[in-house]
Image: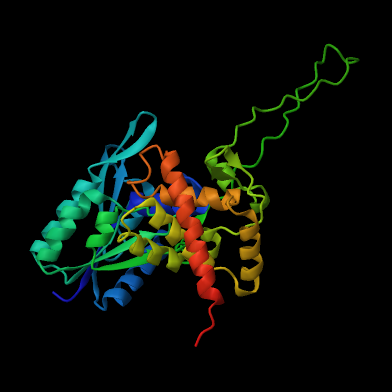
Length: 357
C-alpha cells in the first residue's frame, strides 16, 4: 500500500527535546503546541517518503493509563491515534512501562498486513530492533528520525540506526517551531516578617529568606555562556578558559549526524579514535583562524589544551572498547588517544600546507 505511517515514542521525542532545550529530560519544563507538532510531523513524513499519510500513532505513558489533558487533545486530531502505557515511579524516577512493547506490536502488525509502504519511527529504543528487522522483511521501508542530542552524542541505539533504511535528524530549529522551553523559576525573594505590635519601639526585624535551592546540572547547562561549565577528566567541572574552540562548537547538527554514521565503522582502537577527532577539528577550523590556532596548539605540544583534551576523552567514551560504563578511561588508552590526536594534527596540518596541483 503506497502510503506512510508514523510511530512516535513521545517519551523519547519530548524527553530528548527537553534535554536539548533545557538541559534535563523533564517534559514538564516544555511548552508544546501539539497541533503544530503533529502538522510538522505530517508534512515532513509525506515529503520524505513521497507518500500520503495514513495515520500518526502517538505512544506515551500515563498514570494507570488514564489519558492526560495532552492525550485528550491529541486523540481528537485528524489522523492521530493515541496508545497509552503505564507511567510508574521507580526509585524516585518516573518510568514508562509497556510503551516499547506496544510500539513493537503495532509496528510488526502494520508491516505484516502491508498497511503502508513506508513507516517512520521516532524513537531511540534498541528493543525495537527486532520489530524494525521484521518490518523490512515484509517489504516496508523503515525511516528513523532522531532528536538532536544536546552533547553531540547519539541518543539512539546504534544498532537501530544501522538497521534503518533512511535516517533524518530533528534539529533545534525544527523542534522549536512547536516546542519551547518554559522560563526558569524566578529567584526566591526575601519574605518580610510581620511587625510585632507588642513591641512598637523594637528595631526592624531582619527579613526571612526563603530556602535557596542548590543549582542542578540542568541549571548549569542553562547558565550564560560566560559561566558555562564543562566536564574535565582532570578536575571535575572547570571553566574552559584557554580560548581553544571545541569540535562541538565547530560542527553543525547535520555534520553531527554524518559523524555518528561514520563512527559506526570505527573499530574503537584508541589511536585511530584520536586521529579521527583531530582530523575533524582541523578540517572545521575557520579559515581565517586556522593558522593561529594550529600555531598555538603546536606551542602547547605535547600538552593538549585542557578543554580540547576533555572533549577528546568525552568523544572516546562513546566507544565501549575504550571506556567502561562509568566512563573511566585507562591511563594506557589515554596515552594512545593523545598520541593519535597529535598524529592526526600532524597529518591534517601537512595536508593543509600542501599546495593543490
